Image (cartoon, rainbow, N blue to C red):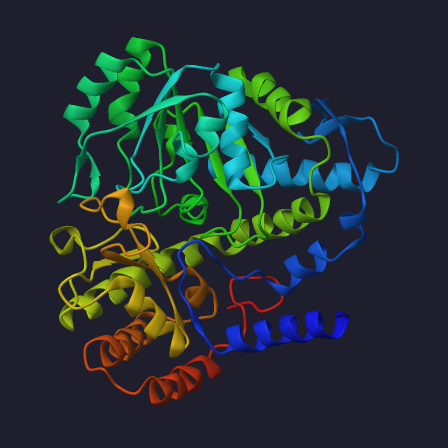
Length: 422
């Protein structure tokens, strides 16, 4: 059994090395991050409460366990880097995923039976923003913002009316289908009027925010920003919560002891290195991500694909979204692309219903991982051509698979990192 497991792990690695990995919620970590994740810290515990700051501004920890001295400094550095990257007063790195980070915010800022506003799942909201997932676990009642399907964004004026009428305790922004910045600043005034907190789920766009290429929600009026650490932000899988100073104690107590005891120390260490990489390389990395997503969207559009929002430049994030109903079945399309080593996902669009989850209208593509491997606008054009050959021209997938492998062979080093500097 051991050999079988090892064989499967090795097969996964070899296969993915020969793929164009373009799932919008994934990324590749640097060797430096991997070394940290595989360190002794994966065996250890560090339960405890946060203390004050030292003369360098690093966090002081009051642990319940001994043997945490080195990790204390690692986590302190990681928190300080996070606060700088995201313009946060305080960062908490205890959550073990983005969904758990959202639970921390709910636990801190709401009580059972409160209402929350956010995007519907069809319009891009994450499941954890709704009653079917984390919000439901907390007994929260969710209602969706009115959504402008043409603009692929919240309808601000209608959303203001809905919020004033239903008076949520927490107003959620951010999402999983996320092409353009959300109207945080525009909605802050109405949040103040109804005494609501503003939360921004930046899981998908955290790397773009850290690199200065997307809106900064904490500067625009959000009280709290939650995030995972592994989408456009190229860290190991984990979660984090950033907040204003007046919520520091609530957030920290919700994370520990409210929802977790020990957190994943090796992931915090890996995240710390990724945060240092983003501090050094993040601006260039985020800039190239946006250039690549726009280039891919334009190239697909020119080849006849129905790429959303052509009238506003397609996207301002790492994502490109297509409605494929006029050319085929989204599930079959992504499966065919996978057979040629192009990995994307099918996705609900605003005009779908939840009943179409297994067979939605859309295909979502993310460019962040291929950008980290060094691909630029020219390669995005090549990828669009490969996708056209498969989806529109019905070319032989084995032949296209060979072309994909040849293309990927030229991009094997992980850039924007300390070991392979671009």
